[in-house]
Image (cartoon, rainbow, N blue to C red):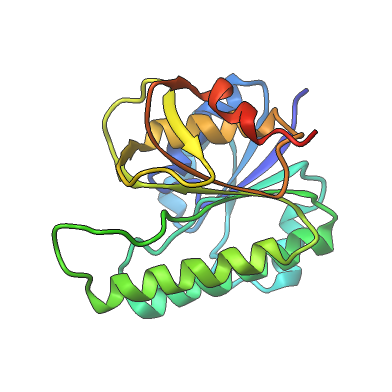
Length: 219
């Protein structure tokens, strides 16, 4: 069934991959982005461009953009640019989006979060540590909401071409996954409403995405 889906962070590294996949799946994405020069590419990809700055929008302003939507995908992120931007986008921006979805009556909320901290070859920077802290707090905020939510926690992201196969679970080993396959997983989730109020960790694997997600179906 065709859905109207607001993609917050549509010009980001996952969002720009997600938009054309939603169109291909028969949905109508509304692509929220903050730079005017990004509008044309999103429109060419089949989306309705929505020019707005997440860091500046109130709950009421976000709710107005969400009116009539069947779902919201939150894939915005500061990219670790600074603690201030992480707080504004990944933190408060996410929280206001959750509140706005509730206010607008949008039940389905898909959140692209982050894989929990694990061993890496280099020490964490202060900004990186803060990023994980904020992601944890916002995951809690989502799970305590009344929305029909799903949280995706992909491991380290790459720009390698997608292969449509992943390893998903309540907890999976740390690894690498391409952004193409994260976007493809989000599309599959839009068509699997019986997966609700679940946290899904994911990394590269050998399972077809739709088959891998079957384990999360609510009975």
